Image (cartoon, rainbow, N blue to C red; front, side, top):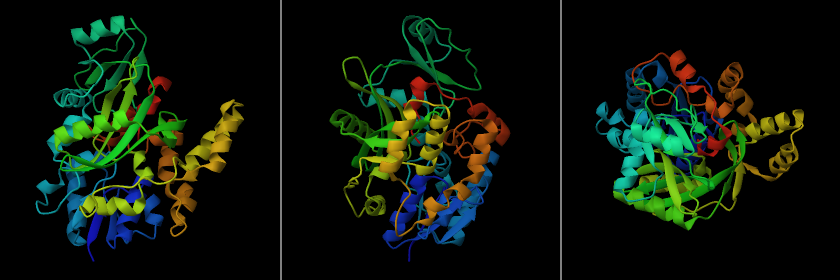
Length: 399
C-alpha cells in the first residue's frame, strides 16, 4: 500500500485531502505541530505524528518532516495550507520524494504581494495598480485614490488596512515590507484551483457569506467565466503544478482583477468532489467534479458567530441562524463522523489562543506555520500577525 504524508491536520481542507487519499486506497500519515487536531479524529488517517512548528525554526521543521517521511516510507508529500511555503524546501533533504508543490522560488514569488503583481503582469492578466510602501508612486496613488496596504507576506487578512484618499500611509519598515494597492470597488471572489503542467484540472470560485473577523466561515460557490479564464491564463503562463488560489475583485466596469495569490489550497477545496482530489493529484484523473452543494459552512465557527450576533442583538442574527440550520458542514461525512463531533476538543489549542488574543479562530489558526522572514521567536511571529483586518478587506482572507 502506498503512503502519503499530509503536512497539516488542523484545518478542514486537510480532512478533504486525507479522506480522498484513503478512498483511493492510500495509507495516510499526518504531520502536525499540535498534539491533537481535526484529522487525528478521522478514520481515514493511519498515523498522526507531532512535529515542531516552522515558527520554532524552519530547519528543525524540515528535518522532522524528512524523518517522518523516511520512517513511514512516504511516496508523496501533500502540503495543505500556509506550511506549503516551508514544505516546498523538503526536496533539498529528500531529493527523490515528490512534493505536490512548485519549487520554493516559484512559491515565494507568488506569496509575496508585490511578486504576484509582477508575475500577473508578465502573464498579461489584469491586476490593480500596486507599488511598494515607501515609494513615491505609492504616496502619489494614496493621495488620489482609496488604497489597501498589505504586508508583503500577510495571510488571512492579517495587518491589512484600507485607507481613504489622502489618508496618511504608515511608515515603511525595511524589516516588514508592504505594498500599497489601488482599492477596487466591485464584488470580491476567492478561488481554489488544482493544476498540472500549466493546465487547470478544476477551479472553484466562491465568496464568503458569513465571517469570523477577516476569515469566511460560510461560503457560496458562484459561476464566473471571466475569473476562470483569468486563472487558466496565469496558470498556463506559470506552468503551474499543484494547488493555487487567488483573491479577485471587479473594477468599476465589471472587469475582473487578481488582487493577491495563495500558492496553496483555500476553503474552495471543499467544493470539489472528495473522491476526485487524490486521483487528480496523482495524475490519473484529468478533471475535478464540483459537489452538488453550492453553500457550505464551518459549523462550529458559524454557531459561535450566530451566538455572538444574538447576544449583541444584531440584525444579522436571524440570517445566521437560517444559514446554520440549512447549510452543510465542510467536515461532515456519515462514514467518518468524529472529526465534526470532536472538533471543539481537537481545536482547543487554537480556540484557547484565539480567546487569549481576543481575535477570531481563523486569524490564529496558522500563525505557527506561516511563512516569515528570518528565524524570529514564535511569540514575535504571533504578535506581528495578530492585528485584525478591516471589514473592507475581510473577504480577501481566504483560508
